[in-house]
Image 1 (cartoon, one colour):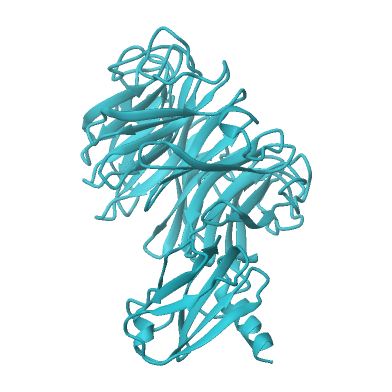
Image 2: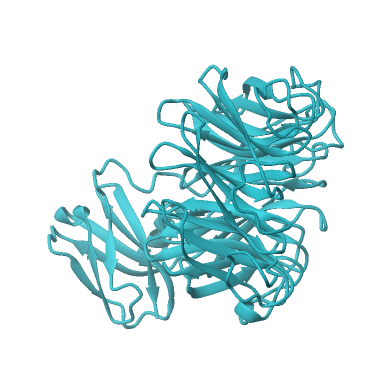
Length: 531
């Protein structure tokens, strides 16, 4: 009886991060009669702000300046539209990132082909350039800035810096203008703007080939990690790695706070790779990349065919600690990644597969949103697909509210089917699809009413004895250890232990375990690896 009760308590509360089941709490669709694609989402004063672009001039779009505009939408906590506004000129303009500072002002990062409308000054007319717009809480423009040259310059990402300024990153094909160094074809180009819109510095990472910047992270030492795609060609540039093939490499460069290169690495095999997202963890970095290789750095990583999700764990100097592939035989592409409370990671990707690691794609050959949970060491724990009979895909617009709730702004191009249960004015072209995912397996919070309610386990991994320490051990408590099947392997009654509790796990089979500590209805939990 005790074993059954123990397993039930485990299923309700302990394992919600390691084994979750997301469901859609609410959803809504927004758009007009043409393309409307969301790229980014942030939380703002209890609501959500979504940025993307629109080709529409009707439906939910109140005004369009010309061919294509930046479109910003605000929705409340239930997904209802509060307001929307377009920014742009008479040509093609789009938004890819929205950032907020500590004063409540917002930064819209995107591209502009226009030289009129909301573009106050364009020194490079008739070319696509970086366009940064700072707006206040009423969405009135404070300033805007065009950066680039006389050729094509495209924004891919950006971030607020620790000193209150803005980094905008993408690629440049311009050998002139604001681009201080240009190597050839397209180069990764990064600019730093002050909060007043002044250009503080720019940085180029490139070769004679095609190089694109897709990911960016300001690190804890105030430097930067720049990630992307590099088709390295000999004879020029500052990309120093030796490519695995003529195809594109996943490039990663570590910069200091002044954009000087500290180190760089190329990762890949005989196919194309690129870095889409970067996380810093306590002992290095986690890269979410895409790959089309099964050799080189991918040897033994478990490539499935087509385009795979490739997760790479590296140390603080870029050396690979481990890497694994996830996906099926078609295209599977990671877009965003979050750390989980149990030490693992939650990956948000797009998938066209319905084999291999992918189960539940609603229309094979069409994109579904693919949510993948992996452990700290890359073991796939669970996965889910969300979508309909058309293409449903994400770019960067995934927002973590807490361990059990995420807000997504995706695109959908078809009418109500399967998970898609909202109807904008027109179908056939992509629309904003905004939805809330919640973990339906969670009935109570993981940590309740306890200040500093942390738990630590060491050594971890282990195969002999472990020590558990937590403030909850200062009073009577119960410790339970479960395996991945939900079986309670050990239950211990603790009476006011102040120093930490030693537990013999030498009889545990190798694998992943969850440790929960319960004190008068309040509990914390963590993971354990037994080797």
